[in-house]
Image 1 (cartoon, rainbow, N blue to C red):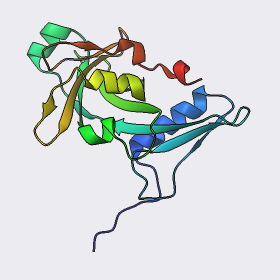
Image 2 (spheres, rainbow, N blue to C red):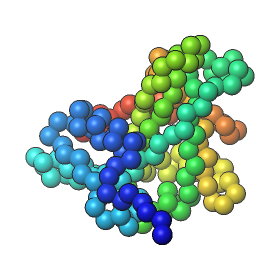
Image 3 (cartoon, rainbow, N blue to C red):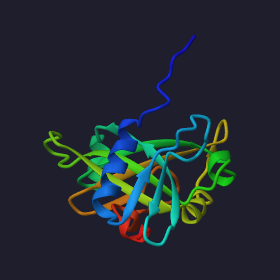
Length: 176
């Protein structure tokens, strides 16, 4: 029998919860207790106006940038996400925001400090972004996201056209 921890947050959800609590005054962060609830990792509620938002959190793997990527894109490093087409276009529950946790190198030259950034993307916009992507084998979208924390820029870079995501980088203000 496999045992799984259903009742605590994973690291990326903790990072997002902490960030939301520090930025969104008057809001509270909740975790669903139903381990079978799909697509919703966190719920936030504004206690004054009772507005509720659901959040899907996605964490990245950290990749050391290739020499060719540094030459092409400059400072930064890459993160990778694989998301199921069905969960994006037809989620089982309403998702208001996707928050991608990007673990990346702050300084490409030294590769000594890992920085954590966030892409905060409203669901409707994220669905539009996905419409520009290629659906890979098995019905998955692959996102290869370059993050440069120093220059505050981010973009998806592995398909025909670069998709600029910089306006969503650490942009928690749109939630307010």
